[in-house]
Length: 534
Image (cartoon, rainbow, N blue to C red):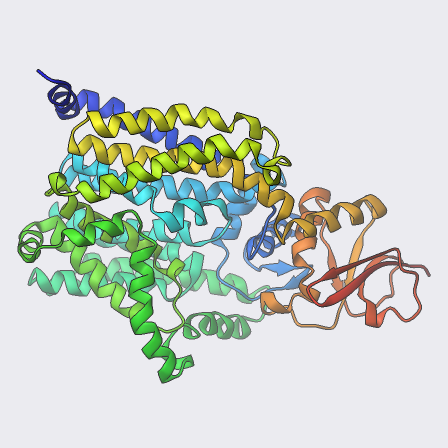
């Protein structure tokens, strides 16, 4: 028996495949958490941090606030989870980003479980790993504290509940599970969540010629329980804040993505570019499109599980395709569905991917060259522990050898492992570099300087600007303010008057002769720290 045959027999052994799965998933988890807390918080992370911190300060987990002023935004579930993570792991970037990374892992495990149950173990391993390493999520969004990976997990749980319990003919669990997870999705991102459930239910049951179960007691009971949960939330909110304003703003967050708020030219551009962008960020699974054959549509439609996945993806994706305000991150719940279908194309043609394997062999060679060169380039000298980068050559060399010696299936696992090692190199080099040189790093520097000056004293933000959208948070000071709240465990307070003695942040134009303790710029705005006495 030659080496390839031996490797093939090992990969066909369920026990060997199980241990291989554990090994790859373990390496993957390390890659997600290595240096996760090193880059400075950026984009919408500071806003999430402030909202979560002020939930803890105010002991109010229903009404969100920024600088102690009501902030009308999405429902609070994601912010509650962030607050819990901060409570457990401290006021730092790692605690903020941990829930998103865990959500990604759980989605991958869910996809593995479903695909193993309804197709097979080898396919499940390949498809779930190709989902976990898709470029946009793995190299960018899993290193943020944003809402979308958690939200996608809830939507995928709801969608898969429909198929799984329909196969078991357990209607109360079908509707109960689907509505339970989509109600949690509502508490994360609002009313648009229910569209995923209604669209998937209607089109799948129509395909099954079983729409009558929509009128079953199980369905009406689930609708009622979901409506009660939503109603109780709004009632509780109305006891603390203006419910009408909140509902108006929540609807505005949804409608701004649709045709209701966009013009015709935006729609034309979106129809053309959006699907191409969507496919691009699925890389490397994107490459499987070139394996498309006409006969595969019949194979998919004849397979109960794959036909459901196709229906759920197509019906829901069309809504975003005709919504010019949609962004790629709003479609993360579709990634597991489409990658399952694309991997099915590849899995049935493993011996027809020589060009893909050649591409990744070239990329592995380039990665080895980069690992050798990086420690000797002056630009990278500022990075801690950069001298250890060549050690990654051992992993890359082993993977390159593996692509020559293993089966076609093993070559795919080698590609996935290469991307995982690539993420580890990214963690080791790029994330510390962001901490030093990114545009957000200066916000952390400002926070250090302010904390050194004021110690534990209260800090006020003087402004008459509105905080109803994150772009209007006073002077965009929320990026620096987030660090101060995380480190000091005290809220910053926005005020329109200077009646209380203490430290204040001012727009320099409003300083009016007060003493300038520290000046700094955020964008085009010059800000100052001052102290006001009685």
